[in-house]
Image (cartoon, rainbow, N blue to C red; front, side, top):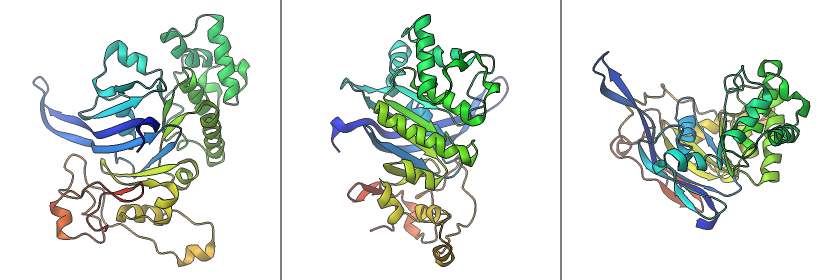
Length: 332
């Protein structure tokens, strides 16, 4: 891959949350392997979709990239528009605070992510004040401009979050993420808490903003049809690891990993004739615990084509076609 075109490079990223016992002498008795060796690149100006079941580590991956969680192991390289490459996992204090201007996050829950005691103007203007970008009237002017950009009335600055609907609150969250002119935004399931009628509006807004401000997105979602609409490339995650990654059309037309095939078979097709002939792949059993994940391939306990090697050896992360990566022993 052309390095000049790579904004973010994630190398063998791990995030394990310790499990402790005891009241006074806390001792670690295990760990939740939420993210366990994830590697991918994000190209400048693209949208990389990250999909998978609940609890597979998608949100933790996004938060660990932005250093909201400190990585247990691995590296995250960020190359800004100035051409300077930074390794984010080693940054602390002021250098990390400066990098936050280039990386932002849109949170999943528009109700929990906005402080109910702050006005909309204070919420959107807070990043400008913290990073000494603007003061006084400049802050108010910038807040009104951002509200206009996301399709809200700029006179709403003195209102509180409870006075807005879910879709409007998410637009406020989007405005806050844009305040510092970032280059990279992690969209952590930004539409899953919204009504279906509002979801398309928010996704269209994100697409318009990407074009207008030359943004790069990591778009985390459950909705595979929405990911197909907005993403350039798609990564499929299962139990803390990425099992397949390729361009959007290649992944949807030619899924190679059994888990990806099962996920896509669950997506409804708006054609009753095709839908009737289509064969659903029903996975057996439940997702194993990330505290004690299976040996070898994580998916072998539910895989319909698993062989003995799948239980013994972890599959190699390899490129099987142009830009099509997969981790499966059975894929040739």
